[in-house]
Image 1 (spheres, rainbow, N blue to C red):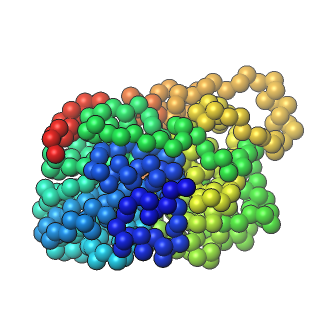
Image 2 (image 1 turned 180 degrees about the vertical axis):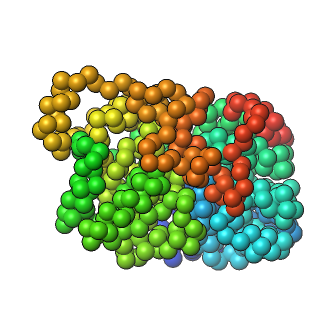
Length: 464
């Protein structure tokens, strides 16, 4: 069995890993790290919870430790882009832990907080910069950062970053990077758009895939509960009152829906918190801190806000609403059964969500066990009614492409940031609004954007 010592990492990094209690690399780490230490470009495909952060962080730290240079003023030597604030913070925290013995400067910048302290830190220069795209562009426009010294460029959660809300930001950022650089892509799923971008951006990349595309963790016990929409909240209360329920993450499709769930749980004397794009940064951090510490065992989240929730000991994931993009199901349930543990995923499904369930089962190549919690009258009525029309991916059942917006208020651009809204030409993929990271400035790329496949301007030079 491969150990971290076998990978040839620098001694200070190995000492930090020992202090963290890490002995053996995960499959994605064991396969990716040797290639990255050789300076190769890499496309890494691994489901969430498999250790992707360490897979790119450790080689970066090793490179900087062996080639010490003064940090560039207003610049950085390694740039890591993340789709959300929470994930950016998590990555920076992990890098500081792994690099505790190296005395490297690590900075993280994202929206929702004052930009001035970030600009002051960037002015002094850093070794590693973790950033969300929108806020990084703000600093670029304000001349607070210069990306001309970047040696390693990492695009984490690449499938999420390629939503239309971030494409414009990536187009702005990539030309500012040196043509000779190492490029790393890490993603949980592999939609066609990722392959198109990888072909343009990566130079002779090594592809590492430790799980089939969009599969779910084997240690997660999955179950679907058929229930009417109006009875979902009461069923959630009954489910959470079960003695076997531990630290639980509840997913809502919308921000307003998440708030309504929390209010209902509080009325039932079940303490909980919500995290989504309408919450301030301090509220989001407090909700995560309460969840991590166990002060509140229930956290209600939307898909975008949940990226970066890397909390040990999540025993259950509950899909209060089934996602209208099947890949999101993989991301959601991957919040449990982390680090070798086991977990459970429970999904509530009403009549109009049956098509979403079929898409999920088709993507994950499985039939999820189910239980019927519907009223007898509902069962009888559905038995005589015509089945609901299959929706376009990302749309409402019976709706057309590009018409999707779940009832209760979505989180797409032009409304509130951070959520899902179907977009014509994007096969219903959720569309992120990088205003979440851009301090309120619109960066959704409207107005004459080129299609995703037209990315040849991003291709780095063939020479090193």
